[in-house]
Image 1 (cartoon, rainbow, N blue to C red):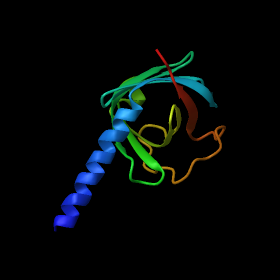
Image 2: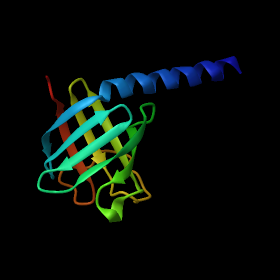
Image 3: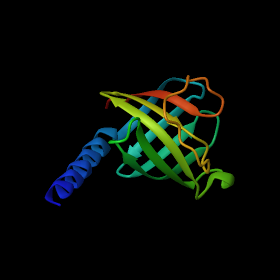
Image 4: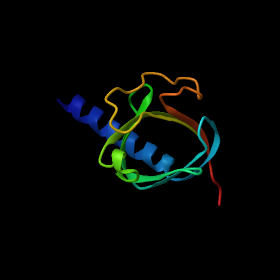
Length: 130
């Protein structure tokens, strides 16, 4: 029982560390859609160039492979509000690879598709430096 408690603490610590590493403004590097991402605490803002702004909260599971992110859209296009976008991501230093399904879609990707895949928004970001 002690081993399970320690493993749970390790997972929580891992999630907190990963969340800290995700904080900040992320600029578009490549992908099918030009998009900017801002992460502050457990809040996000996603802005598509010449398109809508999505805002909400998110949770992560950095222990999963690939890592997962569930983004609850609280503001944005009405058809997506109060739906969850199931995402996968990979964080390597100041580079973030992120692939989101459409909010409300029930299945999550198990691996990264090509960036130009039509059913997903796969984007690479670079952390903005101040």
